Structures are given as C-alpha cells and as structure tokens.
Image (cartoon, rainbow, N blue to C red; front, side, top):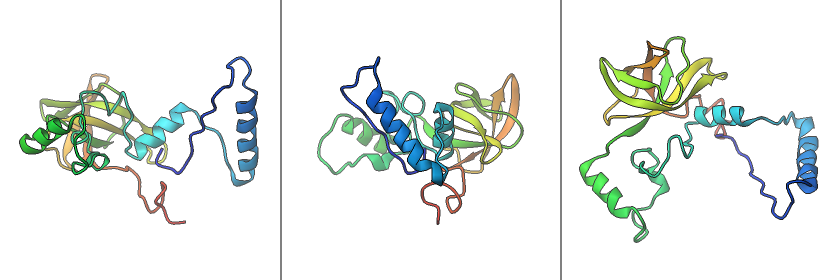
Length: 186
C-alpha cells in the first residue's frame, strides 16, 4: 500500500471455526480504535498500492516481465552469483528492453482501467495494467507498459469507452511524499 503495515498469517486454524483469527482481528481493531484505525477492503488496498506505484503480481508483474522492464531493478543484484534469469537480464542490459512500465496521470475526466490502450499520437504504444480514480489526488491514475522511450511529462492518450482522453506520463509514487506515504514527515 505504500504505508507501513503487517501481514498476519495464522496456521492450523480450521476454516469452519476461525476463533483464533477472530480474536486477533478483534484485538487489533479494538486497540487501534483510539488512534483512528479502521479496516479497509481490497479496493482500498489496491488504490493505495497504485497511488504508491507498487507492482502487483498478475498486473504489473508476471512470468514474461523482467525487473528491468518493470523498473524494479533494485530488487535484483547482478553481483550475487548465478540465478535463474540472470542471462536474460544481462542480454536486456546489452540489447535493451521490449517494454517499460510507466505511470499515467489523467489530464481530463476519465478512469483508466486494466487493458485500455495507450496512444502516442495515432500509434498504440501500450496497455494499462492497473488504473483507478485516486480519491487522494481526485484524478484518474494508472500504470501500464509501453514501448521504451516514453519520458515523464510526455503527452499521451488513453482510450476510455471509445474516446481518447488526454494523459501524461509520470513517475511514482503519484502523491507528494512529504505529505503522504510512509516517507512523510510526522
């Protein structure tokens, strides 16, 4: 989500009798209530992870996408000996990538959704992998893969319901990190 947090896994509990997980959930919610803690669903989680520019497996990450294309090369150390996929990454470093992940900020009304095409002029250059309306920014935002070479601030278009809507390429996170996200100053 871009925020500090925890994932809790409980093993050995029977699905038909989730007493331990229910007690843990209740204790977390109750102890956090004085500090404004509220539960959220997957839609909220997906919106906040998109605002933070974080990849989701099955959307921005899959078996056909490399860390170089996803712009998460810091997740791989080329100096740590041999690993599955190292030769492919070395080849991409020499020859270039096939596609690259970008952020998109809508410049007019419209919500970009998964699968929508991205255009530079008349040429379709990519597709949206994740998109939503950002309640924080009050605009549509998205991530997608395009042909290499798109620059931040470049004018693009996203086809939304058979209409081309203006957008611009941008980086992530989409928000001001001095105000929002885990890096903000308290």
